[in-house]
Length: 161
Length: 141
Image (cartoon, rainbow over all chains, first blue to last red; front, side, top):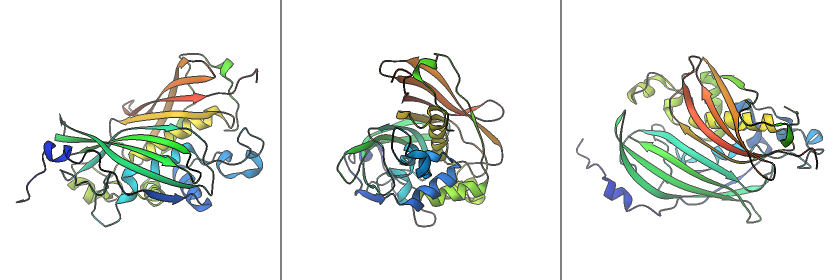
């Protein structure tokens, strides 16, 4: 390959770059597909009758659905394209694995909420690993609802090798 | 699932009820559709092999969702997950049991409880290691 490989220094120049905000309306069908894929049939997610007698007074969406709302996952649509955390940041190597993630929740989210998520590259490191030289990309995400309330903050680490 | 765990009933070192999952390639395809993660290492064997893997692997974030389910199943409808983290230490193949487990590590003020959470292969290898903080209802409330 004649392509010049991006260096750590090149990548550090992208720190602070944000992805365009990702907006998702959490329709019933979106939540249904999610809980079916996970096989998580908790009645708090889909059963209004059950949920109205809980502290939430109605159904909420599973907090773990935020694993699908930020950064890496909504970016790869073309065949062969690898998922990238921030689409306007190039990846220095060809392969991606998810490394480490944290989600912090501040308020419940309900079906019908419109969630706007942003993701910013906040750190880049290089490490030697099992698969050779690995770039460690750290992205910080925030999701707010239609009322402007912060509902989730995430920190995602992607391993690029 | 509709159980009620109260803060007063929890002890440090206690293991919470585990979940067992058994991911098929079909489930990974369902996850791809539900999450929008269409990376081919999760459903295309030839592609996975080109990427230095033996075969397709379970999505990390599907495992994270299993850990979330472990917590929400345990805390019941009157608890709340405050924070959850996980590190993807190893890959998991399809068509084998995955054990999703958790243990209480600390009881704190205001009904907050810390846990270690993890996923295990049948041979005991931990492939996802994480931690969580949940809020539990009180019997006094």
